[in-house]
Length: 392
Image (tube, rainbow, N blue to C red; front, top):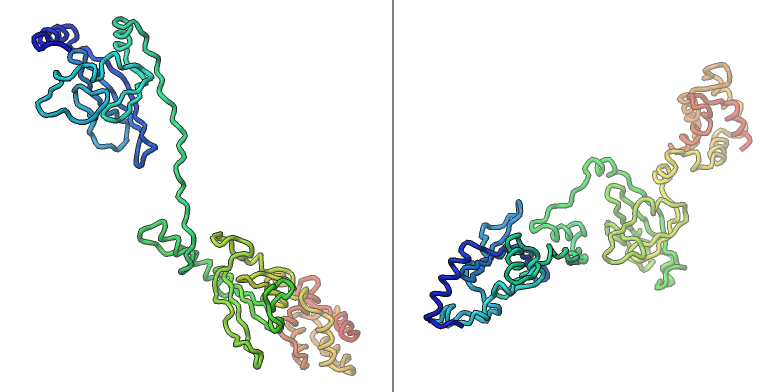
């Protein structure tokens, strides 16, 4: 440490020798492991004239940071910061060994700038020549550290609380002001009237907590195509001990075996199966026994003839016509013969059936038409039809 009468001459000589000569290092400060930390790049300028250091922040294109480039203004920086100097104590009163000197700067090493560890990864050409001339050392080449693979925590969706629908609950997680769930209005309008229904009962073989009277209970299971929801209704039965009514409110139903927070729901593919079949609804095994005609049509794509027994329809017609009325029935058909080849149009065919009290519903009439209009030309060979009725 120089005496006071020696400092002025030392500083004057050093200023004349090193004025406007600056050692420039490039540094990086990686603070990403702390909360809200980031990786920043700096330029460390060491002024040889007065051993002062200046730390400037480097900005990339479109980084969006505020324009405050100076991390540390030009001053002497202590090697280990322990607090501010006492009042009346200047830099000259402190030993130079406590401040960062040019001999402490080396590419590939860290320096501590007010408790921030900056890694020096490169320097300019003048700085390399200076260290080679003054200290006889070669500064290492550019050694910028590769980016560490930092695994950021993944923000997962919170579990369903059970209040409202899952779509409404998750909307409040993604937005401060939740938006209502979107839906396809055209699709819902088209599918709003499509409802599949089944008659069902408990599958006692798979139901481990059922009582002896549960085997007598019957249910109506409804599946709504518009939103893939399910409702279960229990028809009231007198003196059964069960009140009846809504067994399950209309709602989406998770598939059996899925987790509480897994959004895997029953679809029409899970319920439109061959009967009898068992499906799990709300933890209960319900065996689907039979379905309505609309569901049958949908499953068979409108082919009613494959759903009904044509022989049973023929028997109904034979009973309505009577054993001695087959010839009269043939005569009625012959009156409407369209081609002279024992063929009759479909409307005349239906009108001939209406003359008798056959008690056929719409589905059975459609089944007859589909069965006997073999060439799909709107004509029925009534001789073959009458022979089939007579032999029923």
